[in-house]
Length: 329
Image (cartoon, rainbow, N blue to C red):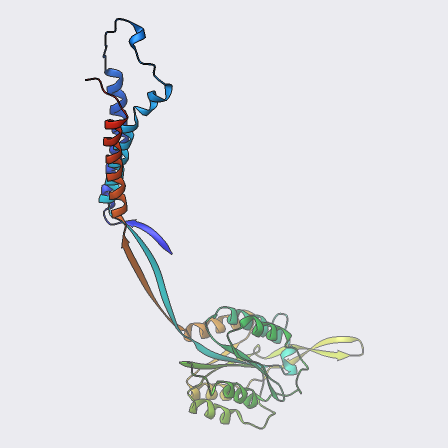
């Protein structure tokens, strides 16, 4: 984009001379009392009305010449700005527990819907990072591989619901699949955010084994245990419709802490929507993408054109006085 600036903008204050000169010209013309004696009005040349105005042209040319000269002295410069942006993004895989216990109502409206909503907020706040989604219950499944197309990822997130996978809690499988999606990544930082509300009771891969794989490849794992302390209301189908009964919240926190510690990550416990949102904010702050912006400015001197215009109007004044205005000898 091109723009204009002045190297010596203080000289532009000299433009105030223009209205002063105009005022002086008006005052001087009113103060003049000049008379010429003629023996007869017939001797007077017939004047066209336009000549009354054209007699001011030389003065106008002089004002324009002075104005353009002042602008030239102020040194107008055109410049353009350009920038190059280098982004060192982070590849993040979200691994979400979709087992039956995620229907518990200690979150609003329940754990899985709260996890989806806050997870989508997290995705929307990191436009420069590639992200993906793995879901797990009794088995694991990749809903969306790493992508910068966050609209598609969010759409996939919105389709997640209970019953998509065999029930159970295969934490090791969910982590291993997310890690596998990051193994071939060339990002400067690779992260798994694993969210679960239970104890590993399914799958062929142990959580420690998955953590060791992540550790080998330098992939950090942040684990979020989701669930209130004590018990939580859980929907149960009865002959009279859905009823809620209190179910004990069981999260294998020692295991979760160990997995996070092994990989250089952290373990967090979310007991309600607000706490879960704050956890995502902490992770967001811990894993910041590095963006380098180099800005360049290109200058071009433009005073020459204004100087030429000033000379042109000086020449017009001289020519106009010499060839157009008639002066009595």
